[in-house]
Image (cartoon, rainbow, N blue to C red; front, side):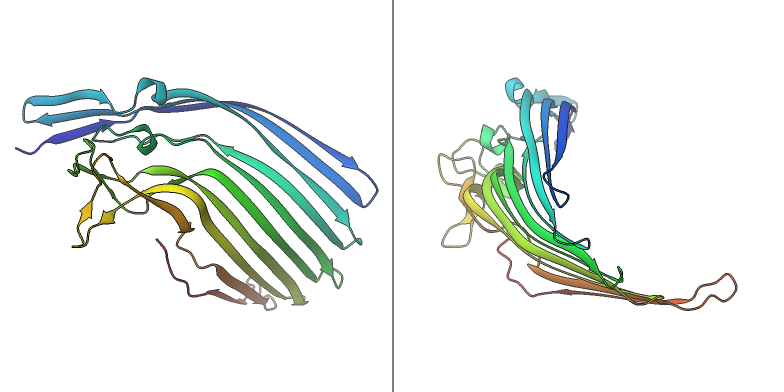
Length: 289
């Protein structure tokens, strides 16, 4: 007789925060902006598993997360600073730093008892720096922005791209298939640029280009391992296989270019005819996922 599985996931997230910011003008061209934020989180993430077969209840409202992991509190201090310099009235540059925080997450809806690192992630933090400039020219008929950035994650919270085989009894017998969260270090870096112009009063043109390189930089992630015959297995003594966290973080082209243009004709009564063109280009890439 088929089993009927019922999962109820009561979740509640409450946060309180305080923010302070300030600006200081060293000169009429050099400006410093700083800000800081303190946040307090009260988290509750749980799931209740019930399994029935016909009129019989095999499991009744089993908590799949330990109480101490389901309800917890976290706090963080984040913020950033930016220094901006106006080279001329039309061109300025800046450098900025920011720190972010994301509380760990808990997997709910598990149908097998799993160890903590397969269920609850660590908190994620990151530090980022950015350098850029922006400006206008030709009586503001041309504008441009460009920036480069570098961001380093500690305990980045990721989620498996595919279903991971689990052996909850650590005996090599696969008894569940799940998507799971995990932590890994990572580095993201890239450049972006946008150019906008108005060659004629009725004609707008804009082009944007970006390059991003997002790579894992240490740690382990749950994975599926195969034997010499191509069969998926879980090593004895483990609930899941783990592989080094390396390679691309996402399945996206690193280099992208897009643009659009619009020409507006003279009005005909209350109607304004126009022609608009759009294009996008993505480079080829090999996926590690």
